[in-house]
Length: 338
Image (cartoon, rainbow, N blue to C red; front, side, top):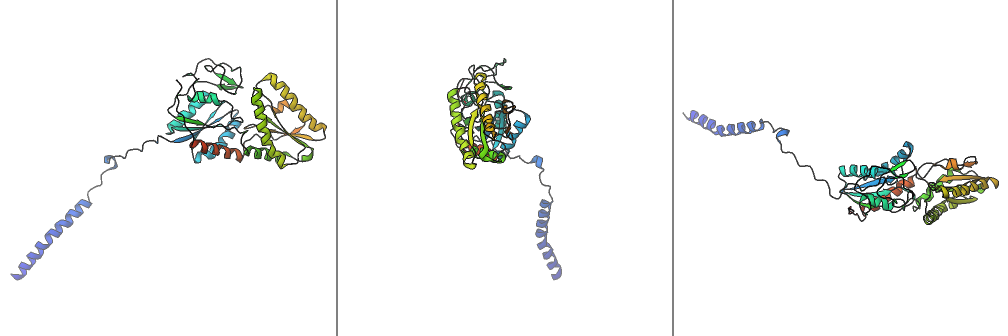
């Protein structure tokens, strides 16, 4: 009897433990809830202060455009970036702004990749709506701007034209705010290094060589004088680098025929004098990319050039990055024009 009693007690003592183990095993064997049945985490809201960069550049042939795209590629490591080709063309600016806004950008720094900081500044403000003057939508009939391509259009409610580039003029639709760069490549000291590097690549006998630095130039005489003064300051780096016979700067004033005629005479005379003095002219374009129309202007004259503009060069990359960094902490303006 005693043995039976002990066995029953032992069995009864284990019963709660066995039940507990069964419960634990049963819980562990239950399937986990499926992902579909789980409550999804809400997506983080877009930042109201997301910063992006809109680079404006003249644009041209595919090689011209690709050179700019290659130059700004490194900027994408730090910023959301879009490029609008055309000299302040509202259509391409609108497309770039839409792309930036689609990527949650609400604060846009506009880096204007032009030689002169004066080029199209007020017109761009009007297109972005931070300055009054642009219509709400693009009008249907294109017209050429008889006053050229610097400053606001004389007929702000019409399309303009710069060479073969369309130049729509209207206020973009946007919820973003903007800050614009005011400095041009003619203001940037680093461009002196670009010019000096170009001259060094081409020079063979500095004491018998004359360097001519050529730029597009504006129509207004006072503005042109400011261009020349800034270009001459950048040319100082060439004079310091090499013992050249002469270093001068000129603007072709390409889009103003009556002023271009006189400019072409001076440019050709400079190159011809270099030959008459027993040497040769080195021609360096102060353009964002390429040689522009200078080969035609200098046709028939023996001169030296590699046709390179300011890009590709690391100094231009550095300048763009510096502009973007300064704009990020700039005074943004929301569109106010109606």
